[in-house]
Amino acid sequence: MRRAAIVLCALAGLMAASARAQAATAVPGRLIVGFREGVSSSLQKRLVEGAGGAVRAQLPHVRAAAIRARSHVALGVLERRLRARREVSYVEPDFYLAVSRVPDDPLFANEYSLGAVGPGSVDAQPAWDSRTSCSKIAILDTGVQYNHPDLSANVWHNSHEVKSNGKDDDENGWVDDYYGVNLVNGKGSGVDDDGHGTHVSGIVAGRGDNGTGIAGLCWSSSVMAVKFMDSSGKGSTSDAIDGIDYAIHEGARIVNCSFGSSKKSSALQDEVDYAKSKNVLLVVAAGNDGDNIDAKPVYPASFPEGNVLTVAATTSTGALASFSNFGKSGVDLGAPGDRIFSTYLTSTYKTLSGTSMAAPLVAAAAAMLRAKDSSLGYADIKNALRNHTRADAALAGKTVSGGTLDVSAALAAVH
Image 1: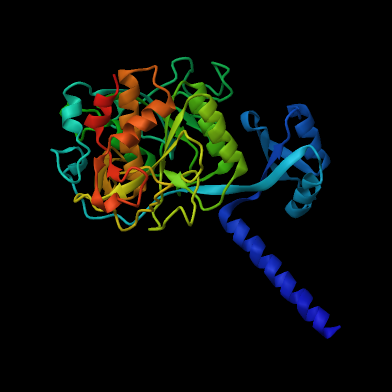
Image 2: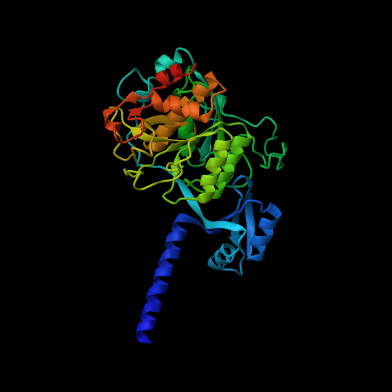
């Protein structure tokens, strides 16, 4: 009996540790449940409620719902009940997704990545001789400071929505989404309260040739703020899915995803597949752990869908940044991501490092290609960018292409 009690205590300890680990990586009290084909939204709701849960948000394009347990039902009990239903294909935590960060370096005002041809340059200047404008691009992040003097002219706004009237004027399913959408609050514009999304947006489309601040790769563009992460840089998988839905609904065919998690979500993978069906390219940061993601996957960077373009970070010398993830099969190409100077909150500028800074350069290049030829699909754009890189010995065997972004060569390859 004493031995059995010891075993039971050990098991209880392991279960408690498991619960604490899940709580640290997933939204407390929430799950995502996926349903089999043919299960209607009304039946989904009845099944969840019958198991002791409540639907927070339905995710129709991936046949799933974000749910919570009712106060009298333990989350584990709700999960077991749903797993037992034949109509359910999976139940998983609503994992947190977080921005890829490394500590700030000292201020570095020279935009070496857009400078003259060199080992750390993306060869932007020859491209600018023929094109400085880009197509609409969604920034799935912490939001954007829409009135930043170096961004305001390039920030997309929903012309069918009335600002701050508490209504869904255009009946698109999102309330008060005038300057993009705020999925953290469930309504309102995608205003940045963290800084990460504003920095990413400046890399893409800081207004060029306006006598103010910096120039993004796209001098003029339409940057859509899709805020799914809060002021601490965390957001849920279900809100990321909703954010991709929003971007697609509002006409973006290029989506920048400077975030990731080591936790694989079936629901997010299904959404990536849905985006593929809508011809949408997702440009994704490889992550900042210095790991080979072929061996230690991160998501969405490691999803195998062909509409995912994964980007490592390089330095001003063309070296692979020490913090950057890599992968001969899982990472497509590199781009400058070390000590990148860009727009920041309160109409300022800041230097940040990370694959979060590399991905938007590639996303901007993708939007530039699509502006040149709007008939290009995600595969055309991905192939042009990946097959026309500048060879980089530091990336040989570390990425699919073995090279870094070359905007001029990729643009020339599109006829």
